[in-house]
Image (cartoon, rainbow, N blue to C red; front, side, top):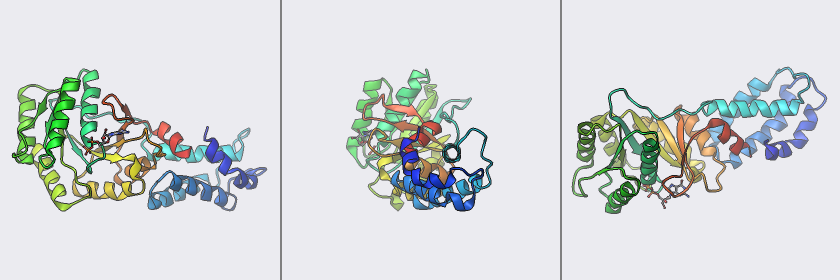
Length: 295
Ligand code: GDP
């Protein structure tokens, strides 16, 4: 496991070999390699710095366990810290006692938000949780059609009021409808822009205020790389997220955005998108992502 990291640490290890303690001086080179590996995996620079400081503290003075090579022990410390920072276990989607559970989807255009809405609905349906999706993206009429088409495909009703209605009103009425129909979970797809803008944030904040969601999920494209950190900070500061969905992990990104999102918001990544198909959604597991990031 972690052959790539082990390889790149090879020369750094020479300093650790034959020593019975990991000390500040003998791990500097190894820490530099970890830093490089994380940056290559697109983890945000500040997040990397914080992470390295934490690993350094944990590794220093760690007694070398009999029978375990110090290099192996160091890799274990790095891996365990990664898993811990990303939340240790999978955290499932909320389910309230008095339905409907209300989920608000947020994110930039093109990240896979509408697709993720349908993926999530299908996932919940498989868990025998009935769903309704609400189409509030009135700025891009094709977005409403896209959700309606996806709804038909997965046999989940879509609440929409066309593209002339007010998005906040659509969300409000959508939730009312879900309540009236006794639906378990209502998922509200929202408008995204190509870049963060104040109108989008204000509208999202209004929808949140009106529907009081139990989950606000930020949809983040894993290919966004370093930018995932700024995106998360802005959405979390202005709207307040309860979790995230990391999409397009079927691409060649190493998934460093997962670490940035979690570290910056303190909120868990709940799912990952692994393809364009509506079935391509998986629960997020910190240990698997740690292995992917370390390569
Ligand atoms: P939105 O603007 O955020 O609602 O984005 P869409 O849901 O319309 O998705 C934008 C594009 O990304 C579409 O072509 C989707 O098929 C694609 N997409 C969404 N999720 C994934 C994913 O997990 N993997 C891949 N490869 N493509 C995805």
